[in-house]
Length: 280
Ligand SMILES: NC(=O)c1ccc[n+]([C@@H]2O[C@H](COP(=O)([O-])OP(=O)(O)OC[C@H]3O[C@@H](n4cnc5c(N)ncnc54)[C@H](OP(=O)(O)O)[C@@H]3O)[C@@H](O)[C@H]2O)c1
Image (cartoon, rainbow, N blue to C red; front, side, top):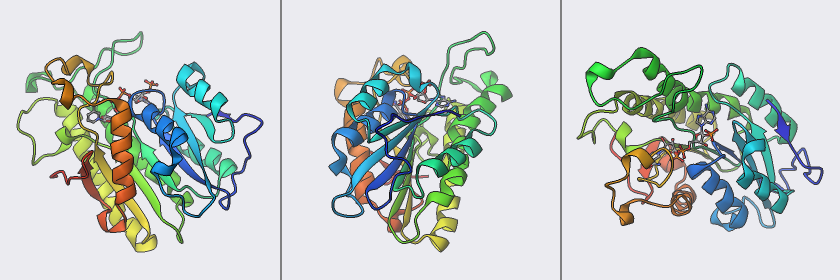
């Protein structure tokens, strides 16, 4: 894993001067909107002490290729560091943990926004499409979906655990999806994605119980963003009405409001963008 820090970036970051938020999946879609919102409107989240700035560690597969992130880094040179992270790579999270050690002793919040529903074919892999029927279910597709949508968020939790403060509030939020709700499954289909998101929910719920024993000020949230206008939803959003298809900016603001409003009493729960509980 490489790490990109401009010379102005004051590293390691002093916890007295700044709260640090890690956003994973920052290249586009909802993840990029989180990074933009947190840089442009840091007061969306209350600082842990008066006068603190907010530093964002934005992780994605190819930060050098993302013009929007490079522009943000030029605009906010001492508040944004870009990390290279492919969540499917062996040892990616061990490397992440090592790089975090160089940057900061504590994290204030972590937001996991990586998700996989479909992918075009490449030289090495066939295309991934959500299943319409049982007959289309294949183990290799299930595995691809589970690695990104279920396994990576709990590996991330493992990697960042040493950076969770004991004496101050901490939030870990991960984007799941309402279609991962077993209770709310009314349409069927999308076997791999639904099951992987349900598995993510169970992993994070389980971790939240363990974490509360040692870190009573920590909060783990599982979040549904609503149908959002991104590449993930585009092939399926033609019939979604304009008012039900949210912009990424709106979703980032709504979800930051949920993160800000929810404390340890809400840990291990599944909320949507409107701050309403989603059934398991
Ligand atoms: N959009 C919706 O309507 C909707 C609805 C419900 C839930 N969600 C959930 O919300 C989250 C964000 O979705 P989105 O709509 O913003 O999706 P998106 O626009 O398709 O973005 C997906 C993000 O995941 C990253 N990613 C994919 N595979 C990766 C890997 N192996 N390593 C690192 N990063 C990887 C992509 O990075 P690259 O640029 O490198 O590909 C991209 O940043 C997902 O968890 C999704 O399941 C979305």
